[in-house]
Image 1: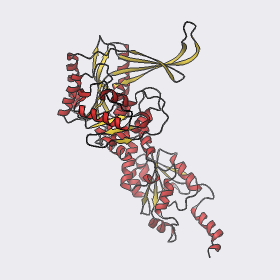
Image 2: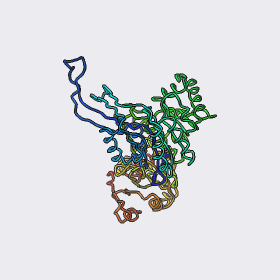
Image 3: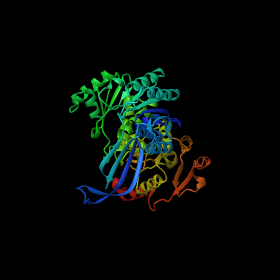
Image 4: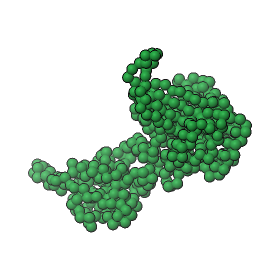
Length: 491
C-alpha cells in the first residue's frame, strides 16, 4: 500500500473531484445526564456544547478537501439557517460550493444527535425526501457541466434524500462518459438500474442485500448478491464494506478479493462510508486499480471509525495507517530509488524527514538511544547504512563483524527506524542530495563542520542536530571487551 500512496501523492497538485449528492448538516448536542425528569420517565440532559459538521455528500467533499483535493460539490439546500450554516462550513473546509441549488420550499436536510457521556441517546431528523423536479435536474446539470471540463472523477453520494434522482444520475453518467471520466457511487435504495454503466459502487452489506433481494449472510450468498448487482449495473467493480470483516471487491469474471479490516477499536461508524468513497475516489483519480484503491480506502475506514461523530482524516493520519499496516522489518530496507519515492510521498503527506548514517556494527544500547533521539526530531527516520566494503575502508579489513544484510535487519527491527538504505560510498553525501532531509542527525563527538551534508541541508533551510552519545558505549569498546573476556578461550 505504501506504493499506492506514493502514486497518489507523486505530484503536489492533487486531482479535481466533482461530488454530486445529498447535502446534510450533522449537528451534535453534547451534555451529561444526572437525573430522570419528574415530568416523564426520560433522562434530563444538561447541555454543555453544540457542534455542527458537514454530512452526506458534503462529508465526502470535506474528506477529499482534507486530503488536499480540489473539490466541487453539487447538491441542494433550503433557504434556512441550517443551509447558511452548511455554506459557512463548506467555505471553511475549502470546498467549492458554486454548484449548489437553493430551494425555498425545501428544508435543508438536518440531523441533530443528542449525546450524553459519549453515548448517542436520540437523533432528530428534519428533511424532505421528495425527488427534485425536472427543472431542478436541468439546473443541476448546467451547474455540473463546466466542472467536468477539468475533473478527474465524479462521485455520486446518494442518501435517498431526493437529489440523486434517476434522470439526474443517468444524465451525469452520460456526461462523464463523454469525457471518459469514471463515476463512483455510494448507493441507496432498491433500484440500482439507475446507476447503470458506472465504474464502481460502494454499498455496505445491508444496502447490497436490499438492492439484490438476496441474503448476504454466507460467503456464497454475498457473492450471489454482488453478481446480481454487477449484472444490473454493468459496473466494472463493486466494493462492499463489511464492517468488522473489512471489505470485498467483486468484478465481472473475477474471483472476489477480501481485504481484512485493520484492527482498531470502533467508536463511531457515522460517516465511515463517506470516507471510504472519498479515499477510493482519490485512488482511482490517481490511476490506481480498483483493489489497490480499495486497500487504501480500507485503511482510511479503520481510522475514521475510531473518531467520534462525522469526521475526516488527514494525509498524515492516512500515511501512518498505511505505514503501520506494512511495517514489517523487511519492508523497511529499500534501495535509494524506492527510498526517494517513499520520502517524497511522506513529505507531501506532511511528514518531517530525519536522516542519519553509520556502520552500526554490533548494535548496542548506545546505538538504540541515539536512534530513538534522532526519531524524536521528526516523523520519518531514514538510516543510511555503510555497506561491508564501505566499512572496511573506514574501519579496517577486519570489520564489519556483522554482514550488511544482517545489520540492516537488526536496525529494521527497531521501532524508531522507518527506512534503511545501504550505501557503498565512503560518505552519505549522495543520499543526502537525493533525499533533502529536513533534519540531519549526527553524534555529538563530531564538530558541525565535520558532518558530511551539513552545508547541503542548511542551504535549503534544514538543520543539523548533534545528539549526545551514551558514555561507555561503543562498538570498538564492545569488541575489545569480548576479546579480553573470551579471546584466550578461543584457542
